[in-house]
Length: 207
Image (cartoon, rainbow, N blue to C red; front, side, top):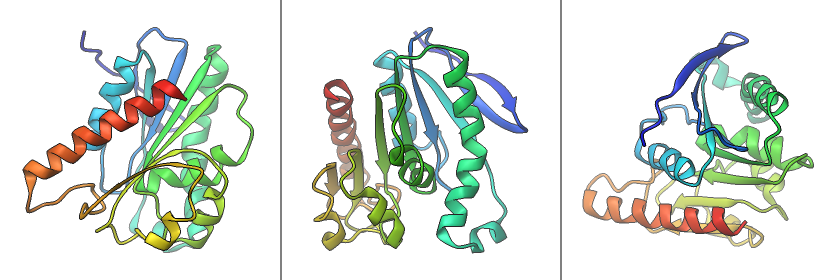
């Protein structure tokens, strides 16, 4: 059954709520130019809905000059927008499990905040193309546990840094870019997307 989103606002920020009448919830944080209708986030939403989760997609936008701040300030900026909605949902209903899914910019509040503090309920973290080129990102990932997917053609990819993330479930794809695509090879891009979703499903079912 297709679940239509309920669109609402909180603190002036809009969000989409896919109500699965569940005791489990997933929060999704998009990238700067990678919206929720793009393949990886679209199929991730369908996957977590299939696994029985409610889903919240938070719709934030920022002016270009706001990205001229230091990386930690940018992370704080995104967190200050998403967290009131996260806290409101977690306080409104007694959820038993939570998943945080982020893409690029959206991984920053997950890595820098949600993964750094004890969760009151069991939690899983999914990081699509995290910004590993940022020094504090790597530091905050050490000795944590998340599902992390990245392509070797991503400018934020570093084999040296990936080698340090042994506590994570890593999904590294040859030649995929920051959108987890090979623009010149659509067939291979689709195959990689299918493989990624299979790996993610296995991770979420086990953890």
